[in-house]
Image (cartoon, protein in one colour):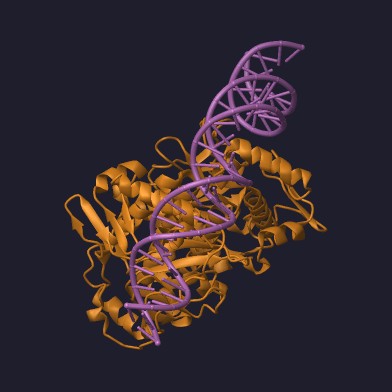
Length: 265
Length: 265
DNA sequence: ACTCGTTTATGTCATTTGACATAGCCGTGG
DNA sequence: CCACGGCTATGTCAAATGACATAAACGAGT
């Protein structure tokens, strides 16, 4: 866990498992700018196959690594963290999940979660039992297509992170992550852009950043301060502010083409 | 490119684009131990949708980063390397592809290859034009299922690599990669196991290892030597030999459950 | 307002890893 | 057989990053 001693991870806040069944027509993903909503026929299918919604408070663990992977979900609202734990306690945060993302697909095949998932903010999820989800996907070509699409995107994200960990020095690495998060926030419509600057209000601790970037906690702290003083990225505990997006984009070689509209299920 | 100066990448050997149409019943993947072959109905579909085979000599680039992603392929024989280049020449090898793996799916959506692919050994590929492949997948639920399965596996592999880069020190990192490659070799039946030891005969340069693990070339070299002297991993230019699999498995915390039989297309 | 645990911050020092320079090696092609 | 280019190896030194210790800030709960 962030290179050296450390605390055990998420933990405060109460579990909150409200089971709701809001109709899909009121789905909060409906008119997110970067997402394409399913058509009415699809909505009906989804409504028939999903098992309901679930709300999770910030800090709560949603799926535990090693648990049976009998359900998947789409993120309706909120931001979550996906990570892998090694036996000795080291933790690698593998990706951050935004509204519209599909979580838990891997375990639908392996039977067991290869990673854990924790809510970074209060979160609402649309749940599917594993079997019903696979039904959906194999019965409806459009869903198959969309799931493959989402998988390909997730793969792409992981590859970008891999490049960051393998090739970027600490400073560039942190800047990359900040930018990546903000871009996803922009796309998802949860990060407002004001002129050349943007802000994503998601609380992420420096320890979590460290565990995502493979840096020590201390070094992460110092790098964050350096970026702040340089006026490039202001990453406080409560969110990320980038005063000049184009600057940071240039620094990390951001490819603006990389943000096509995403389907969701 | 492996942290500092360096050569430009692959390059020797002649391009060799034989277009064959061996029937699927003689497909070399047919009776690989770790793969499940498609049934006869599937075979017919595949035969109708694929555009033929292609042979590529060791060292040749198969797909260029940035090229139009108008085709995908399944690896029939051989081992390839998938990597991303940054503008300034840094290179991150993102994964190594084995027989049965599907390559090029990402670009089927984005239109443009986000990564390059180079053959590490002489290689045979089963080609699909993008459109025909997507037809296949959306028309036949079984194929959709298999493609999603393969995507999920690829994601899993990338996550493991991410853990290695983020959390493992050089030595463990190299050992991890060696083991991962050998395990895939075992599964695919291209690496013989003799008692407690196994050997994978795939030529990978230290520069390529360095670019996969995010280490400098020099440090990679030293780490390889250390592992060799310790009798744990003998990674010569021509292949990887692990004298005691269980030792290395213990060192990197290998999960033996993680090798289910793979479908292919 | 106080207390406690978590998070952020800072100083000092140790270690890992990278950079540079150079030499030997090995296969390929003339 | 030799020459060349890429790969591997080794020494020395520099830089980036990690470890440890400690303190200040912050937030939730009493």
